[in-house]
Figure (cartoon, rainbow, N blue to C red):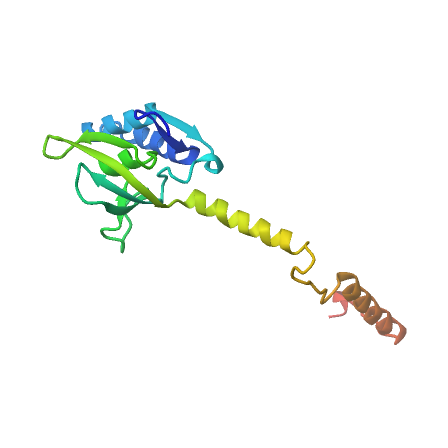
Length: 187
């Protein structure tokens, strides 16, 4: 697990945070401080290399605020309609704070009431990068199964050279029957 002051971000997530910082430099000071801290402490990795226990964009994460009950949200790029109460956008201090944290890792941020709140990642319930890797493994496994004895049997239904032979035969039959196409100039 990374040190408590660092986080792990995919190249995509890091780029999005950089763009947010560049486009909105005069944003709320509390949010800007959290964003700068997140960017400066980030270890950037490719999406194939991000551990499944790290919060990335579109991850469903169970987390606690201080010692409160666990909440589950989807860390999202921005607000989406129809998913009220399910999303935690990274335009929100909590959302950007959770991004890049691993299970068991915490980050303290200023609270709206002037105090401090500590967010702790309990569990990454779903991470799109891990799900993608799992799908690829299943696809590769299915491809390997087709090579194994007893695997699925494939049968050729049409061959392209057979279709071409049929087209050539029709053209030759039309030529031998005296078919004469005068072309577009005859119209």
